[in-house]
Image (cartoon, rainbow, N blue to C red; front, side):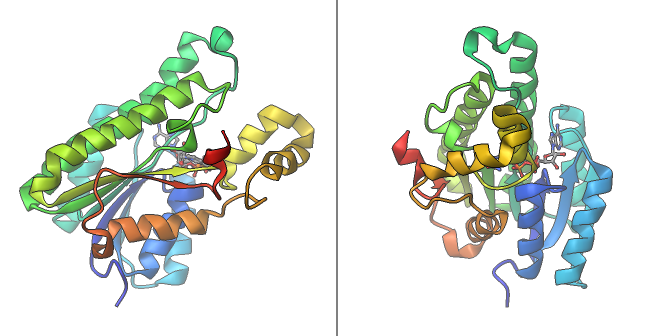
Length: 260
Ligand code: NAD
């Protein structure tokens, strides 16, 4: 028996990084998956990786932009049509945005990051919580960030959006606990994915790998996290084993957030 045997798990941002790793991990734990992303081609790649681990896994792929409310309603409707319910939701899609001082950040960039990282998470919660309340059960894991619990610098939009995700998490946890629903967030530090490579390229250009070494030199564990480590935490939070954990924000960062 896997931790997520037979459970219907919906995930956004499933075509890359943390979402892709979480999809593969959840499939190994027996989940039936509804996988959402903007990038249809890369979603197929996730499906291939899932099938390598569990050839019997049920997988539904949906291309959608999480910042578009109608598209979010549609991915939730399609998931319920296909599987009849939603047991777990990894509300994860997000972007980093450009790094800049607050005075230079620019309203267009700010709006774009908020639209995807905060509005996208809010829309997902709205439509999934409706389904879960009707069922009388469910678990939601929102992806915040260390940037959602600490000041990191040069990331006005990202930081505002991720602090917002933490607020949404705590607010809904209080509202929906009585319906058998838990809502938690994870706060990853630097986990080596396409997003972090992009971030290091913004800092170090061609020398991004050097910038990476310098970045992790101040981490208590002196390394980047691995997407699989985050996937294991997500799987635990989506499972029955963590049923009484509600409204928390769990850092997964090697201890780095204590040094900010
Ligand atoms: P990633 O770039 O590897 O993956 C993000 C995925 O989200 C991509 O597949 C992308 O196509 C998808 N996406 C982006 N905008 C979308 C939209 N509007 N609609 C639908 N899908 C969209 O990044 P990642 O590192 O896996 O990041 C996943 C989440 O984790 C993000 O919310 C990010 O902020 C958060 N996070 C990551 C780290 C890290 O170190 N990697 C740290 C803290 C938080």
